[in-house]
Image (cartoon, rainbow, N blue to C red; front, top):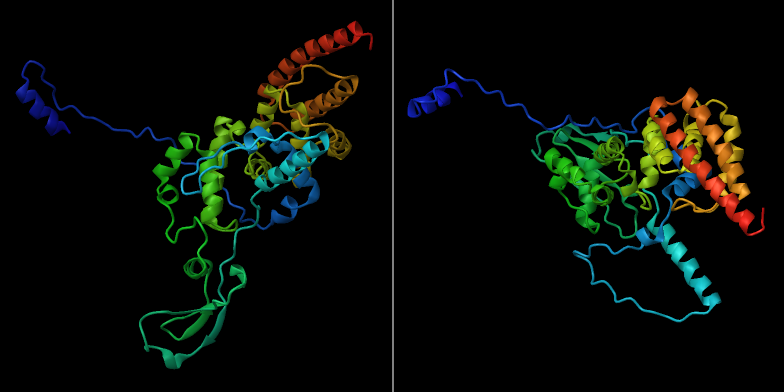
Length: 376
């Protein structure tokens, strides 16, 4: 580089630069270190337990406007023209019930399971076959109707050992004989090239990345858990939780953050958006997974009361006395959590103070309206 500047100085004698040096420092932020479910404890029993599933679905806050929004139709059939019907009240109830079932299907969460174990199952050793060939021989059961995870696939090594194939070989052979729509034999560049992956994350294409990962990988594959972990941490760092709400990926995101004891930033976001009831559900989820919340034994009764109320997609404009009593209990619960368990005490206390001030004005307004209507 100094040679370049000397040449420039020779061509421009008026502005001489003597032995200049340039140090180029990349501005690419540090890579996120993924956290996999590869410990001794299996997350599946906790994730699939009924109480955890109920809380995750409630925290997702299903909004039908987002669930049934128009999606890009590249590679799919053309979107159908909407139809309009005149319905009676009974027929409308039936259509709403059907829409709820469709929404539950669209919001079905990808499973959270422990990372797969390496398959090292030697079936036989035949020294007489050593040197017979330099290539491996693969044998696949292609019986129709057999689940891919139970399909019999073995390989014969050049050293005469007959063994069960490992997961990556099984996946390639299953995809060859029974291709899954959207899955590629070779991993897409968006997953193998870190720059491309981070480019998508920087453009907040979180749902696209997670949808594509669900198609390309199985939930117990290391690559799947690595990509989802990086995506979840990117969302948590920038507090972009709203981009995944009302999608099937929000539940696994919440579970991931809770499993790795990193829910404080999400609680802060909930308090800033006046979702104190959801914050209580999040603390109860931490109690279920880790059991380290102070006075956690009182959470199940409070969670039961919260789940009995309708989902609040927007801030309420008017409160009932039952709402005020329930929110007061939730406030006390969050106060205890912030004092004893939180790692972001100052930020959360400030957000809680702002919620109190706004909530106090809402209480005065609601009670004033009730008094004006003679219901006080």
